[in-house]
Length: 134
Image (cartoon, rainbow, N blue to C red; front, top):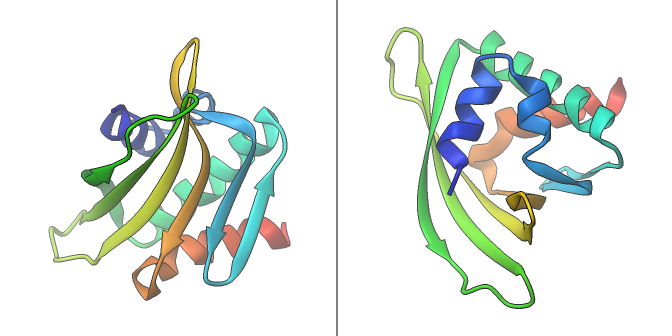
């Protein structure tokens, strides 16, 4: 799974490459609602907002741990991921959880939907709200 590489792309500011890891249209879900992303250009913009939200909080990396994965059916599968944030000051950060809905493509697995789970994902939801209001 390319989740660590994808996270590195985001923190390195390689938002074009990060956006290519998704199929569009894609959807982000959270407790606050949903954010549809209908084009590659919109995904690039979304990545910029998410990166900004994380960096403004002093987060310098997110390390994924795959908790579980489905067996693929019809080229689609789900991946449950716990994301450990890493702060510049090395302070303990909360773990955020997501379910990534993946689709197998000729270029490899790509995400078509992310469901951010629980209250622990408030910072990600904040970034998505910023995107919705932009």
